[in-house]
Length: 136
Image (cartoon, rainbow, N blue to C red; front, side):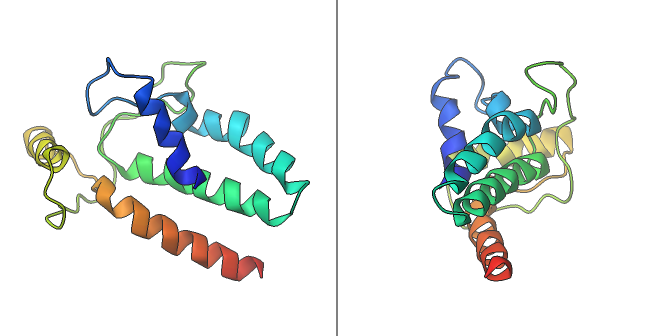
């Protein structure tokens, strides 16, 4: 749930291009300033909430950094920018959408190496199951 909720900031950033809708909530500073306090607070109700909040949040940020988009790791404090892309681009032909078409064009034009966002959900679920089995 928390790995998806941080994407709702895209609704607030409507003027940005489709590939630059991130806010500081999706950066490591967001994890420290929002994710950590929230996980500690909800862990007072039940200790499992600490893992259930922090791991998906951190996983989402990690996956975003594998993505083709630019990132600002120290936002909102510094405007240091991470270059686009990281890792190996895995094209996604399973889901036909306008965003996928734009991804492929951008990756080809800029010769970027990254992954498609369509892999986020299965990876997040697998990662969460792995962490939960370790914590039990």
